[in-house]
Length: 106
Picture 1 (cartoon, helix red, strand yellow):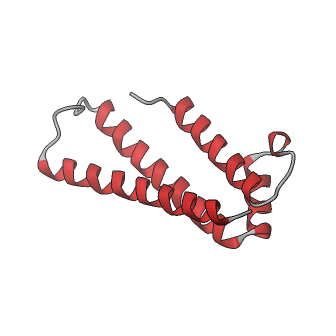
Picture 2 (cartoon, rainbow, N blue to C red):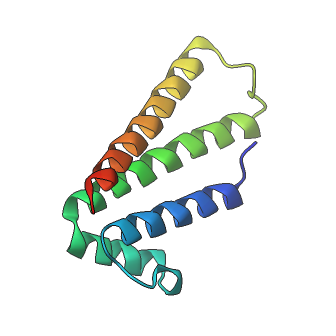
């Protein structure tokens, strides 16, 4: 099972990577809130795409954690499987769109 720490670490990496790609320096010395504000000022599209990715990732994680907390891990009904699949697709597609945008930047 992925932990809260794993999620925080991934999102920290993702925001710092995004910030660096849009030209923000000294990202290790800034909070995620500061970086998000600076990303918005540097590239509003990157800001919107990062926010969508972050939100999708958190929504997926919370659902998986909730299922695990109630002992459903590996025993999902069809509705839960469909919801999980939808959340995974959203998480992965928002990440892909963000990375595609960042790849276009110098």
